[in-house]
Image 1 (tube, rainbow, N blue to C red):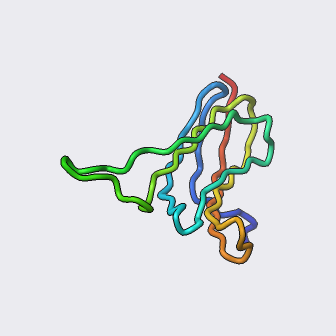
Image 2: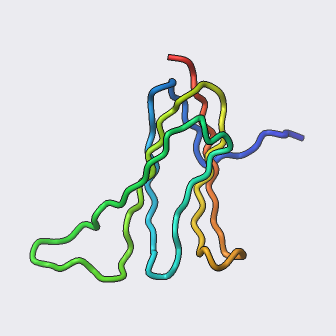
Length: 107
């Protein structure tokens, strides 16, 4: 039997490089994406939202989905787990988590 953990994504970068992960978020229903890193000193993390694709002549949809983008920059070498969670903060029973394995090599 194998003890290998299954990851949603495996990323391989060097110290000083980064990667982005984008997720559709339905905040009007309370579902928010968040990120946690097992070693907080290993990455610089920022997040932002992309505007929805709006067709010419149309207004943005109020309460519609948005795209949340997490940008992570590697600060030190090692192998790390980065967990992205989609959940309603008030409901601990309703969560979806994706775990990325990030291998950071020296530059």
